[in-house]
Image 1 (spheres, helix red, strand yellow):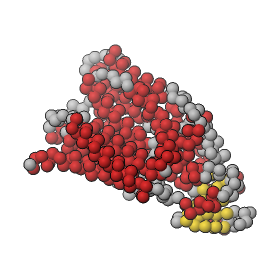
Image 2: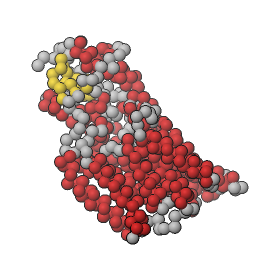
Image 3: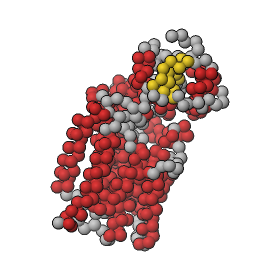
Image 4: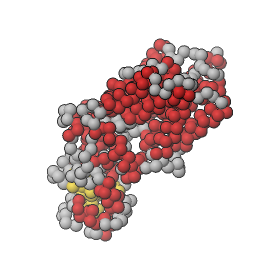
Length: 473
């Protein structure tokens, strides 16, 4: 009896995590990126398949750009169009459960229940800083699937050609598709190097077939309706990372999740060293890649957590036994999970209309004033509300929004100086010639504008609505 209960403890822990994820999904939407994805989804839907020619909604966005998640943007927009924000919240909950299932199955493919659940739980905690309702949730589902597939390929050396069309779809859903390609190159290259170290040929017919999978996947990403420019989109994101908080270098101060991922890396490396395990070149490459993603930016900490999860599960399994002897996954287990997930999503559908119907951390109190603005009116706005303004009030022009790819680096730098009331900020305000300003009261620019004759017309929480000296009520 006790033994049966102990065997169920890991799955009970997994159920608790699933409940926590559904609770996260039921909260009011506050991520500033969600709003511009909804606006872009609307514009993409109206454009048919001409996704590479969609125009930005701000005259200050002068850079050529390509939508990096058109299919996801359209799905999110349709969910909001049909069901309102509760539909977006429910879709987010579905993505979180799919991510949990994919991560657990990936870990379960290399370890028994206890290590697999342990690694999955730590992975969820490590990736928690990036779990928000936007297209990246698709990558958090697909990335563990790709890692799992390559771990199996490492055993049987059979190329999974279906990864090529999967990458094509992934490239339409989110910009992290290229990480799946890098994982493939890491495993295919690692297996080729292992064969060479064992006395074989570095470029054998088998290694060529395996390398063809990620290389053809890269080619497939260039053949989407967006066009070849989709391949260059990640480089533009990196160039503008200094202006976006999650694009900056990972900060370990007062943040738990990067420390959790670092602990995953150190524990795995320590177990490999202490147990003197015969670790493959591919797995070492995956660990090194995880270190890179952990350090490169806040937004990629979650990527490192996902990549490390199966390595942690496998390493902990080695402390228990050489390998798991119980079945990887059973039909009964699949049915149980699907039933529990279906019940959880049904409950979520009943809850979100009451909890996620209104947006959070945006100045909804200014609605009447903003809605009355004429077409092409310019609003000098705080960065995080730019996407919400563009989505909710399509007739106005925002000074900036979180779709930073569309703005030049010089413009982003000038905007940042303006928000801090530094440098030639008055010239920036004069050039944008705003009709209104929607700013946070705590922004340094707010008192600076007040000193320059601007008036605070209304307040809503942390936000102020301001009018320039020339505007009369």
